[in-house]
Picture 1: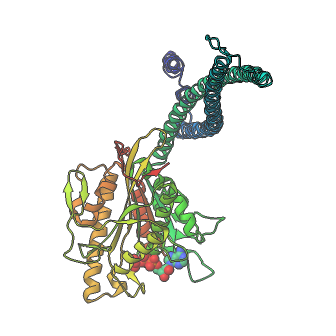
Picture 2: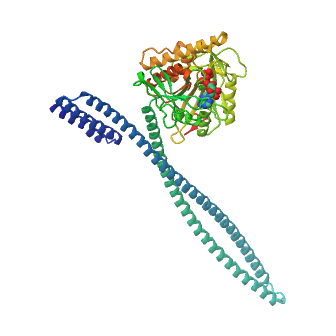
Picture 3: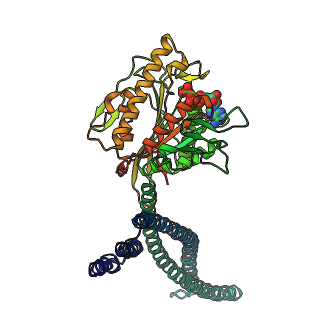
Length: 584
Ligand SMILES: Nc1ncnc2c1ncn2[C@@H]1O[C@H](COP(=O)(O)OP(=O)(O)OP(=O)(O)O)[C@@H](O)[C@H]1O
């Protein structure tokens, strides 16, 4: 008991007091949970040891404890994310309000500046008028002087001319009136000038005031912007942490729509595959593998639509805009619906087209470079080239792969996206087999480069989305392939085996991962080598006759599910002047 209390006190100090000192709410909650669980566990352990009770209670409690800690952590991260969302929405509102206020101030400012310029014009015209009046006045004075001079009698004695007194009076009256009106005009102009000056002063004051207010608003706006930037960065990191908690490799199972309306249980030795419905979406009971079987989502139900399938992958696809390399693979037996899931029919497109349309929503500008190639019998063919030539080769540079000479098309509209995908699909090798009328005889890889720019923080990112529709695995005994179909089937099965070997090596963290065993795995290396996010569709058939393949496909899915890629890495880029930025 002394040992227990020592450990409890130590745990209390480490997990409760220390986090309180560093005051991080998230760490405090997590640590309090850990502390409580550890203490509780110790008490139970103590009770079990001294009472010699069943040890399984202790085991199940340990399991429960770690489950509770994991749940609380995820829940906290989720709540923190929601709180950040609220703060961001609030800040965005404030930002918009401030923008509006600044706009109004700018309008008022420009109006006032207009007033000032019109007043200045009026003052100038008044000044001109005054100068004219003064010139008139001078002229009148001159006239008066000359008239007076003309009325002064000559010095020499000459016979006095008869003075025209009435004319003289008339001139004097005129002069008086002129003087009076001149004075009136002068005083009026002076008053108007003073008024104008006063108005000008007032206008200048109000311009200065609005300038000050504008400066304050700008400072406030800048503050709000920096706060928004901080919150957005935090939200993004929380979102990615949540993604990492859910796992960087995710597996979804999709079952092809069946022609039969009433499905009964499909049985194979100790495996029962039950019919599925929205009410009962989990349909796989793998008794001997039960403890190993683990999928992210319960196996998706029969009626799941193309849109629902896409929505399931959306969180992973969206990471591309944050600069992560993302890969989506469709794996399954021939005829199980891989091409339907990835490409889909015209009126109900699949993940390939929907993901590009999704990036269009984020995109400010108009294009994303897209490339499409197929791996047919271990040779690489460009599906978008207008002049097909020699097969392409893979160039390996460290961890990154490139295919020199591969056509990259810039899609500008939604019609372009569909058109490009249709062109690639048309050029892909397909043939009719016993299992599928239009069976893909090659692996299809669509690569999409996504440049993202955060408008607020100015950070630029670049991610690559790789969409891969694998050719279907097939048992030669069932397809009864011959000639060219047999060669194709052998190449397909060989590369799929290489892919399974890569996942098996990744699962047990082997030192050597056999990426070089096939062109498919070599090309997919950047997406499977640890710093990417991956999403795997395992497509299965609902038919009883396909149960062997269904079980093997589900086992592949289960094995992929147990792979844990290391922490995904973001590709941050310095700011560039390219126009094709997806802004989030
Ligand atoms: N969810 C679904 N709803 C409706 N029809 C589907 C669905 N999934 C598959 N199909 C149909 O099943 C047939 C086979 O599908 P698809 O060609 O996609 O299989 P596949 O796995 O790509 O085969 P392969 O590997 O031989 O190319 C197609 O006619 C397709 O329209």
